[in-house]
Length: 325
Image 1: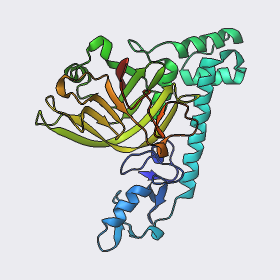
Image 2 (image 1 turned 135 degrees about the vertical axis):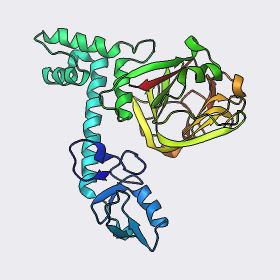
Image 3 (image 1 turned 90 degrees about the vertical axis):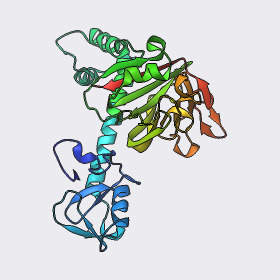
Image 4 (image 1 turned 180 degrees about the vertical axis):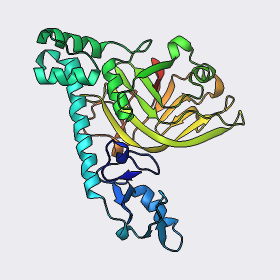
């Protein structure tokens, strides 16, 4: 449920599609007569499929609402809460980035705040020593991975995973680059982070679901889940995410392809591009249409669209898959 108020952050997600609510747009909160709120996109679906021109609350509270958008107004208090949470998150991530890149400039209150965010003891110590500890912690690596603890904290926040951490389950240069190698390591694990490295660029996507193989080995399977795309290095002045919403993920059978690849995420990312079951998962295609590219992008473009790997089609240096634990 996404109702106004609430002690935790569950109310900042749509209770139907589970997408993170936004202060405006297709995922802004709209409120039914009963007081329960859902994203504008889901409210639109409810209106289009309403019986007798009335919406029954998905929470089954027994209160109905007229199926017109005018009768389902924006929940401004909840939108304000979403904006406040987004502002707080941006401040926290900016502080983490400062700690990893300019720890010497941290003030004592900032040191205390980052210590708390990282779950580190802030026992009495000198300010220079605490700055050094924080910098060392945030630049250390997740076990077996090339992901730093700083980037881990960015990704888990973007995945709305609170204080959870990441665990490496697949690395192409360690486990093998084929689709079979990939499936053997990833299995049915849910909450997946796909990380791609190409030269100095680091980027990828998070999906809330797991990968579901089709029954037909030459077929393909589609699932819809929460997806967000992100860049950790090489495209912006700081780690950046975009297009966090419900999107499609297509998985090919072991002997086929899904829309030209072994794996297709959110319409923008192809892994194991074009070569079927024996494909090298580092063979990639990644393009973000210009209208979705966040401000501040300084990476490569083709015809105005962002190509995070330097070109639309490329061979990645490394592909990793991590899971939120």
